[in-house]
Every structure is written in C-alpha cells, then in structure tokens.
Image: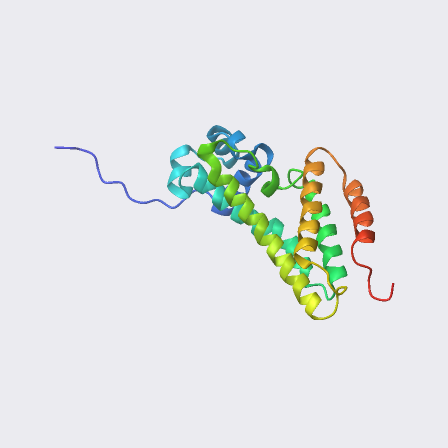
Length: 204
C-alpha cells in the first residue's frame, strides 16, 4: 500500500502576465526557433513543468506571447488610425510605429517581423501566425482608408488596398532597419520622405 499522501493544488508563485512579457522578449530577441526552452525558463524565472502546466508547449507559449505583444505594442500603432483624416492617420501610424520600433524599453524591431519569417517546415505554423497578425493590421489600415475614400478624403481613383500595403511595407522595412541598429531619428526621417510621396494634406 502506498504511503504517499495526495497532493493539493497550490496557488501559482508567479504572475502570468509578468512571465509572459519575459517570454515575449526572448522570442523578440531570438525568434521562435532561436528561443530555446532553457532561455525561456531562465528569463521567465520558472521551471519547465510550470511552463508546460501554465502555457502548454513552446508553440502555445508563443501564441500567448504574440497575443500579449499585440495588446501592448501593435495596439498603440493601430490606435493611430483613429485620427480624423487619412493623412493624419497614416502619419500617426508610421510615426508611432517608428517610435515603438526603437524604444529602448524592449528589443529593437518588431516581433511580428523577426519572430519567425523563416522557419523550418515543422514550425511553419509560427510563420502563419505572424503573417496573420501583420495581415490583421494591414486590414485595419485598409478599412480606415476605405472610409476615407468614401468620405472624399482621398484623391479620386486611389487604390486603398495598394496604399495600405505600401504603408505596411514601409513600417515592416523600418522594423528590419531598427533591428539592425537604425535610430529613431533615422526612421522618422524616412517617414518624412514617405509622407511627401503619399497624400497631401487638405489645402496643400
């Protein structure tokens, strides 16, 4: 007869959002495949059994981390789309993005760009998750520009889908440059040039 006594559930000794933020930073710095379980658990301050019990496997942890990233980082740039004109919305989006990409409070660049653009076949799901996140932001931008077109706030015949893609491509290109060391000033100077080529504000 076993002498073991039943174990009872104990409250977690860590805050999920805090350790999730730490995991997000590891994925952000090293990408999905470059982030080892040892690096993740060391940064999170928990052991592997706790990781598995709370977040599931590595892919499930990444999904949670990426969702958290959208809540805290991408949402800020997308909030810029609430500006009253298409020009102001694009400018606010690009400038907010440039600020975020070079913020010293977290790794440079963008998790959705450098987290897993190139993954081995067994991790193709990660690339799909990141692509879906970028597509969601582009869709939000396109919807905002479509409303602007309906309101007469864009030149006649403007291809809003192509315009949204152009703005996203610029922002994503900035992410690559930021990860390589480009400064906030470098990116903002690029935004200055892009804005001249985009939409002239009313009255200009």
